[in-house]
Image (cartoon, rainbow, N blue to C red):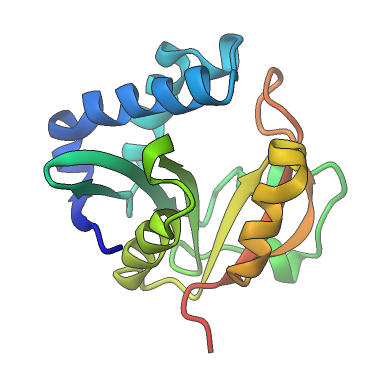
Length: 184
């Protein structure tokens, strides 16, 4: 199955914000039962706005027959990023050194239930990365999601776990994963 994808920058956020928020609530709350302050629509909207305020933020929305199927977004890690500060075990400087061009963080990738299991997440992921110029991409995943199946999916996509972090006091502890933007 091939979906239609549209790329967006921070200047477009107001056009796509409600679609992203509605999809987040549908998938995170209804499908996965993730509730509590960290997953609330308003808190997610705050994180969305914060991410989009950073240089290099882009988003991608997928559609099939005009129906939104999912989204992903992320931003370049700035030279003064705090991304690596919440690691439970410090990483070597050669891993955490950023120059504002080295690493992009995939902040979110979400696919609605009717389109799961049909390679839509992979298509969104790869279409988003296709336009990225950084050398590597990082993401956070809750190792407990799907009894480890979500993390295993990212590993199948070429990511490797490099440690754990808890970026917010009320967030889960996430596995931090890393891979090259362009696979060999």
